Amino acid sequence: MQEILTKNEPEVNLNLALDHGLTEEEFERIKKILGRVPTFTELGIFSVMWSEHCSYKNSIALLKTLPRSGGRLLLVREKKMRDLLILVVDLLLHLK
Image 1 (tube, rainbow, N blue to C red):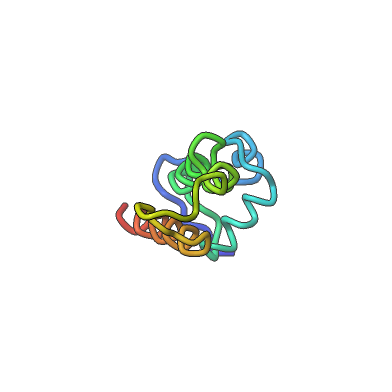
Image 2: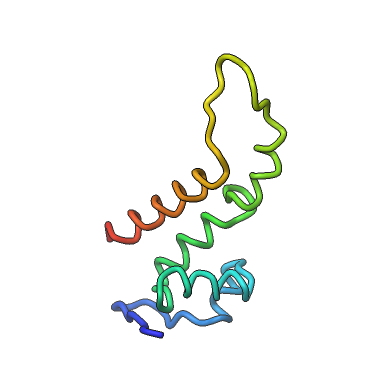
């Protein structure tokens, strides 16, 4: 896989990903999404987005408990939410 090295950033590897609270499977998924090893900054972004406090993978169980019918609901399907989160990550990665 292609690796992007940036000035003054440590080499990103599985041990660093584990130190960021990611699992081996999540690290492999990040590499698959990007098509390469993430930079240190990208690893940090994924780590925060997938953390237990703000990640979709952890909040979906709570989101499923919310009402799904009624007159004043914002309806977002799970797949659309996932696609939106992927778009946001993609935009953040291209802004740097």
